[in-house]
Image (cartoon, rainbow, N blue to C red; front, side, top):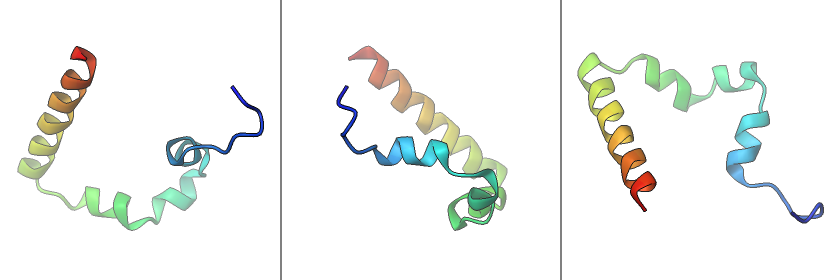
Length: 55
């Protein structure tokens, strides 16, 4: 891997501090979701993961 290459957004997210992420709108909205919404999101994430592994 090229040492001079820039990092991806995914890599940048991993290195962000917890306190910075704690106040982000994306994280706060997850806490207010209903059980049904969480259930649907989990199902969709698992289906997407399975499709990626099948390739």
